[in-house]
Amino acid sequence: MRDRERIRRVVSGVTGEILWDEPMSRHTTFRVGGLADVLISPCDLEGLKTVVVRSQEEGVPLFALGNGSNLLVRDGGIEGIVVSLSRFSGISVEGERIYVEAGVSCPVLAKTAYRMGLSGLEFACEIPGMVGGALVMNAGTHKGEIFGVVEWIRILTPAGEIQEVDRKDCDYGYRRTRLPAGIIVGASLRLSPGRREEIGRRMEEALAHRRATQPLSLSNAGCIFKNPSGISAGQVIEAVGVKGYRIGDAQVSERHANFIINRGKATAEEILSLISLVRGRVEEERGITLEMEIRIVGRGQESAY
Ligand code: EPU
Figure 1 (tube, rainbow, N blue to C red):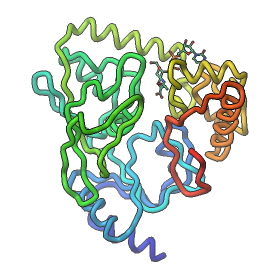
Figure 2 (cartoon, helix red, strand yellow):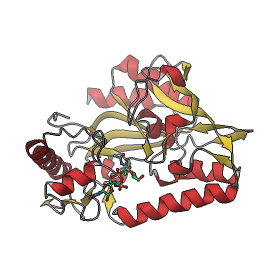
Figure 3 (cartoon, rainbow, N blue to C red):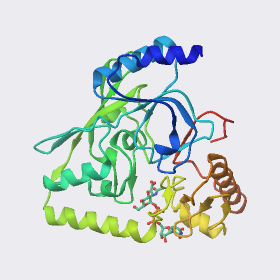
């Protein structure tokens, strides 16, 4: 109850939707996850600042949520406050530069660049996440990664201040970054002029490849593991023979072995057990330790990931 009061003090008066005891299964593409104590979607930067600063003062844990596309929330849910960036959805274009807010979806960003005849973001049409999450993990495909076009990112620090961080200070690499503490609220991207037909063709090709190779009609969280150096995780997982394996309603996709699909009522526990099984088998048979690409959060037994 004391925790509730502290949470109430953090969110009181903030403009935006506030949902108490909200099932995270409604906010993750896996359709899995227990209750968040509260989920708030502030309407503006002032509101977000208030939540960030007060949660520090009150000692309430805070978790920033995009569209839950690369995320596994445990069945025990999330303690404290989940703050959704979904209302931060502005995009402005000036010449070859785009300033994009964290809550814009990557496909919307890619389409905007296409409409403006700007090249460099074609790959982003097949990334299901929002820009904020894509920046945190330097999301990408074989055709490019988001840090390929970043100039600087804008972060709201735990002290409630806005900090701009230059790309060279983000220590980014394949599916990773090291950023100062805080919540990403936007980024400035630098693209190059291109012919719209060419840009459109590259986007179509990427989407066709994705449709042909990934299990898009079933709930999933994208690729589970990062690709080990020089090989695709999906290829290795298929080679050790666990494609199609199932624990409860969680199944290693028959279509792409680096995906786990939720066949309906999967629990986080089932998905985590399947992840352990796959990793164990790849480690035993190939001596490769697969690194997680998805983020695993929430109350419950801390896993080794
Ligand atoms: N393959 C198999 N078996 C499988 C899956 C793939 O043998 O079950 C083989 C394919 O035949 C191909 C190779 O592995 O020869 C590569 O497969 P794919 O083109 O599907 O690419 P990927 O390396 O598995 C990466 C990204 C995807 C992105 C695709 C397409 C990572 C971890 N994954 O997958 O990103 O959509 O390229 O650009 O970098 C994600 O990050 O969530 C994600 C899905």
